[in-house]
Image 1 (cartoon, rainbow, N blue to C red):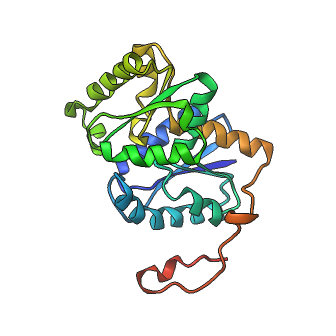
Image 2: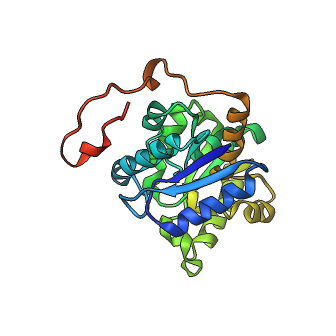
Length: 245
């Protein structure tokens, strides 16, 4: 069986980090195929970046579905293009944000999210409301560093991330922490040991949930909003992105 994990941004080093976290979690006999978009932003930081990240990501998901993927994981904490991807393919599609929230709810009464920039907070808060999990989240915090700062050990991003976790424990008495960026996939274990509480990163959580859905033989419902889109021509630079049917 093959799980496909797609990085919607175009930074290869982040894709490699995501792939390593996914493969470390996957069961024996489960193949993890990692891809990234061929177009769009180098990091997804807010609504504008998200809009331009979705077409290339959907292209990779359709390619992997044709190649026999059993499930797909969108490795952006904003769950970029999640509904569109679920409409496009029959295999389960999991966003790492939604996966991390559900795992946190199994481990703690209240969790806090620590993300990168303040502009990410409204996106995350919106998703929590949409998923019906806002009441379980004590607060969404931002460390004040960009996504790509996580690629630079000298940036101070890890120290600021750790400081926000300590503040979440002290100020809102968080019982668990959700890391709000795919670029944090390699940090959860060390931060959990340092701070003495569960620290959840969405890549590993999504792999476990994807495997479970595959083992249960479940597919995405094709009734209602996730029914396949009607085939129609697309114009201009999107001509090649029309739903293939």
